[in-house]
Image (tube, rainbow, N blue to C red):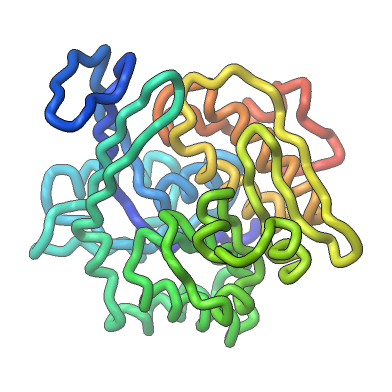
Length: 301
């Protein structure tokens, strides 16, 4: 089984559902509240593990009650937590999510996730060296993200860089990522002076642009390609991108080609948004195989 290392955030999601979002100074009555497990790193690790990946999570949590529960959740999802470090000086990370008509708005508070500092890089380099693929996101300090991608590049280990939440990133760093997977708004921040087609052509077989219901776009070195999404009625889109990235990692390590790996990721994402919560809807491999859209040629066990 291929080893997938996910280096990133581990947080608690506080989710409110409502018929509308309040205006400034306005108080409204919501429909429901739920606490779920999240953090883009943990989400992507859970997505990969449920699809059969041998997943090692690296990150930082607080020593508070939330941190203990976050670690327990990772373990219950069959994720190795040897590289998850509890710290005392700050609380565990959190995200505060409002869901209206299936779409979400999020306020993210890094907390302990920002304590994954440079002093831990030696240990992380050991993890990277022993992995088949590394997955990293932007819910870590930028200098740490840069060192992770640089380390993968130097050690010739494949890395999927999900540049979310959106922030400006040096294009030289993007060039060192095996794959990077922005959505449309993140693409516009990364490449404000480029059209989508120009960006795809500049990074063939590297830039994987996720466009929600429009599908996924990439350039195969010859022409621009669109991989269609699967049409479903969403219940909660929280975690769809994380599900895609985790599934994409599993498919790549299983030996699937680019387009097949994207289709596998799209199907996982389409199943995830039919249930509530970032991790709550992430499918298992058995659930994937029950779908009429599952392709037997994927041959993932």
